[in-house]
Amino acid sequence: MELPKLNFKEDFDFQIKRDKDKFFIYDLGRKSWFLLTPEEWVRQHWVHYFHFVKGRNLSSLILEKKLVLNGTTKRIDLLVTEKTAAKILVECKAPHIKLTEKTFEQTARYNSILEAEEIILSNGLQHIFAKYVDNRYEFCQFDF
Image 1 (tube, one colour):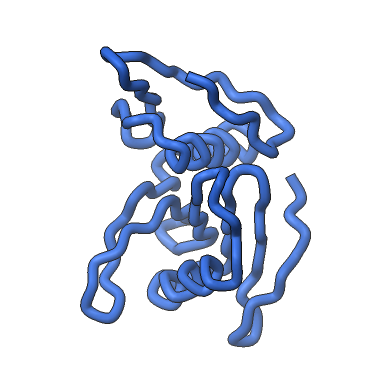
Image 2 (cartoon, rainbow, N blue to C red; image 1 turned 120 degrees about the horizontal axis):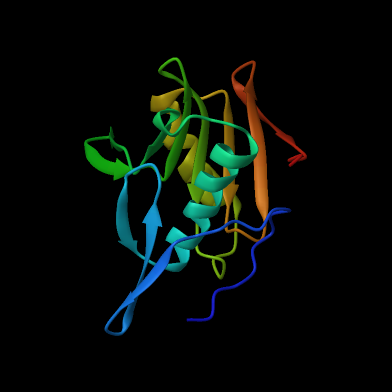
């Protein structure tokens, strides 16, 4: 399987296995194998980044958490917490998905419930980083 090189300074050591014609990637946080989709490829880079580069405990990384927004159930990709408080919401898209204002607004709607201090919207190649300050988002340069 040909996977794109993503825009991370580090190269991570992923566990990938093949079962018949499908590939799976091991998720350290959920301690299970997941179908290796393009979005999962991006999500696992962020899990490894926060755990191995930023030193976050795996228990502080919440993956695919359900939340209810306007009566419909949604799933967030990754939430970084600190003492159970939401700190960083990471919304992952597949590398071929263009990051737009519409995709950022989706993430901001999710965050209206979670109230994380920061948002990262990423397709693995491009990363949009914003901090929530004074009831609005300030876009910042993401510094790895």
